[in-house]
Amino acid sequence: MNLPELAAFLKSRRDRIRPADVGLPTGPRRRVPGLRREEVAQLAGLSADYYTELERGSAQPSAQVLAALARALRLDGDQRDHLFHLAERPVPPAAHSPTAHVQPALLGLLDRLTTTPAQVITDLHEILVQNALAAALVGRPPAVRGTAASFVYRWFTDPGARAIYPPDEHPHHSRVFVADLQAVAARRGRDTEVAGLVAVLRRRSEEFAALWETRDVALRRNDHKRIVHPALGVIELDCHSLFSEDGRQRLLWFTAPPGTQGAAQLELLSVIGTQDMASR
Image (cartoon, rainbow, N blue to C red; front, side, top):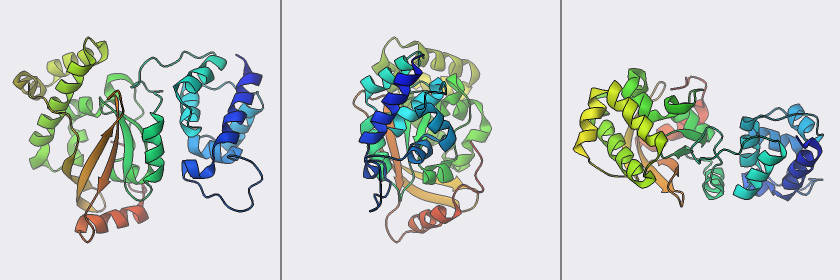
């Protein structure tokens, strides 16, 4: 592990990021050309002391830490791979793995969506990164990997996952999830991850198996949703999607027309935050 070169590379990338690029105030009294160490640590979800150790070349980061740093420093694909090579960690091969590199364009847009819930997910509905309002609205993703990280999997195997939507709308969401997965499976072709997800869901869920046989196909682009929040009740929102170029990642954001109850509830959501939210 080339820790000195890793430390130098991190510092060089930190120096090139402007605070405005990641949604931070510029301020008139900055003494560094780019981000401060503590700002990178905050963006990556690390302690300032630990990040300082990384730049001193005295810490060995895990793959999860490297992925978080790549997102915080807005590295492109080649730079992300270089970071993993310096740390002698296997480069994540897929755009949907737990250490997936969020597409820079989607991440840049997410940074600017500060007043509305927004998150980036994979095409199998695994949350990769979300802002604070999204966490307050739909909860933080569970700390699991593999098939269980997919919300589609949890939707058909865990009744508790469905509490986010009113019961009378569950059939609609089931149909939409399956039609979306049909489109993803066709686009990915002979992809073992999708094939494995479909196989296990057909075994575990009669509802999924029946819907899969209908062969309905439709990517989930935009939708009107009624989300059940534990403190604010049912919130009516419009959900919008922006797809990455390869289709494997999606930026989702939630809005409500001005003057509606949904808009007022989003205002309250920013005050309540995540204090009463549990992962789901």
